[in-house]
Image (cartoon, rainbow, N blue to C red; front, side, top):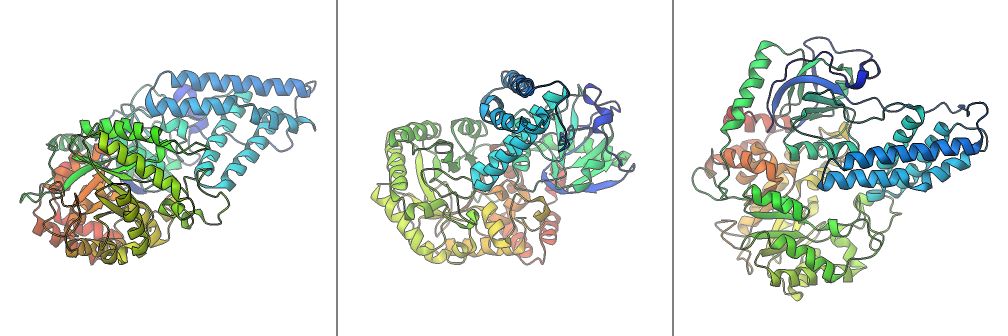
Length: 604
């Protein structure tokens, strides 16, 4: 967790851009802006705002007198080369996922498709700027209409469009500011090319006017340990260089902090040092064990989980091998990637989620792109109803990789809605030779029928991100619905409680399902692998509701472990009983924090 106080820097604007980025109506001194706290920490620092979005060229904007179509087209290709060079240079300064994102954006900038589409619009005398804008808009709208993974690429096109127009105008493209010192980043939201190069040593806190608790920006902040507040609609009133206090737990941003807030930020810096290093065994103060696992998406994440001393993996997302392909990866390819992850956890549990395609992750060889409501369409396990062989091949690859390594491999299916679906999936797994098989609980129907699902499933894992959005009928990416899309909602917690009770009541355990790593005194294991598990206060509540394992981003394990070790199982159950009976999410959160003074002690 990053908690620090940075001296005010009233001139903290990048490259003389203060005039261009200052808010037209600045917030008053001492005023408070509220949003949704998505990553804990309390800091004070100077604001540095993202450059404003590139304004659209006037629809009537024409090419300068004397410029031919060829001249304007040459300007476009030159601008594309400039943008590509800038992004490629930035990519050379980073590594891993950040480099991949920047290189992909650079390739998109150099792709002749956009330039050629713009050239066709130059016939009536449009300027290069206007032609690029219209062509980019058209291509982005085509992507957005496809939805899912392709829909997400629309934002990349808009980003490239803005960079090209900025290059044509000879001005700086939008991007992360560089004031020369650590700062609080204030933005509407972050584009992929910006999030890829966000440096926690420079960005000490993040405040956005858009986004929600499960948005990409929020998840990134949690993964990097940066205090963050999203959906703070008044954030745009903060001026460059103004000093602010940011509370990423309570969602507060205060301009010109008082002595009390300065003391609180300094206290938070000391409190973060009180976190107890995780020793590799999650437990409560009475010795009751709760396995603390990591969510991963590939080998790189596996390394971070090992460094965090995670007890294993509670969610291994396998989509990374399938996305961006026109054909299904071979069994051999899958075996190689699965083995690389399994090898990192000898003797430890690795819970692998089978392909979660569809909705926001469409695949050309598996899903349709014309569904009217993809979030409620053919996704997850449902893709196997018509194209079963893809799932069969994946299970065969998992079993082959499992036999070659020494990890304790568990397998679960996403988007299960009925007991029949659970039984079908478990049957397929057993045919493949896999010994420990379960399902994701992500929709209310599965939660309500958990007792029947446990009749065949060896375990379940609650995906609280989807369970919340489906229970509350609230898109988890929409900042305007962030109050609804909150895992503290009583309706969501009551469903978790119902699943926990079903898990405890389940009779017997199948091969491998009753391993000591879950320390479930009876019944069958109930895990949580959604973002809720990374909230230390909510983690206590989840355990009290009957959850036996918690899986989260590796960075969150230390804080969750420290808080869990401050309560007994009886105390966790008492807190959970009080919380689940609350009328609102805000009251549920307040009750939990009231019973957990350690949260204040640790600055969480």
